[in-house]
Length: 182
Image 1 (cartoon, one colour):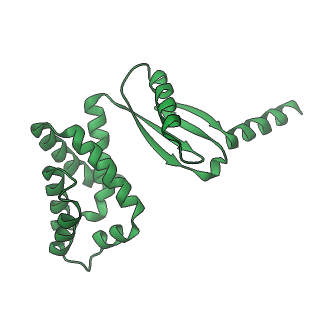
Image 2 (image 1 turned 120 degrees about the vertical axis):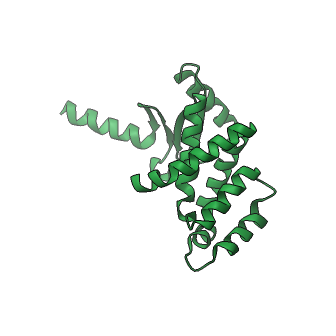
Image 3 (image 1 turned 90 degrees about the horizontal axis):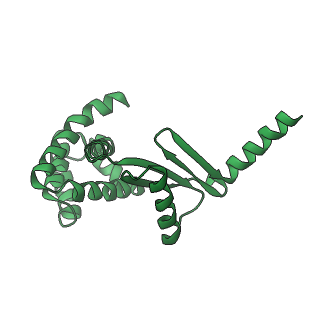
């Protein structure tokens, strides 16, 4: 992944500079999250955009027709540049790197939350308050994902802090306690 990261950083930095100049960094960061969600949920889109068989002009037309109304022009321009340079296979890395740089710039901490099942709006709000308290008042960006292997509960990773409130974690801790007791 370091090679992809070194490839992605100049594109991400350029996008951040452009969005800062236009005062749209926050909007573009939200759009990047939505695009990453779309990218990860659509293998057809990923395969088409990463395909060496499709010409860059076809990819740009597809991106333009699919996304031009939903994303900022600066983000659309980046996607076109990636298509022109046959770099759309690095799309996910570029978007993730942009989000990292944006968070660093804004002093936002990333909290990764894995839950056994989708959280309701009220659960997300309650969790968000608790994570904010853990962060000590600094801004927090929460990345929610579903991990069915947890069986129940959730795991929060905030920097070097990890809070394991999952059923699998409780079973693991119980097993360790039993081993120590015997």
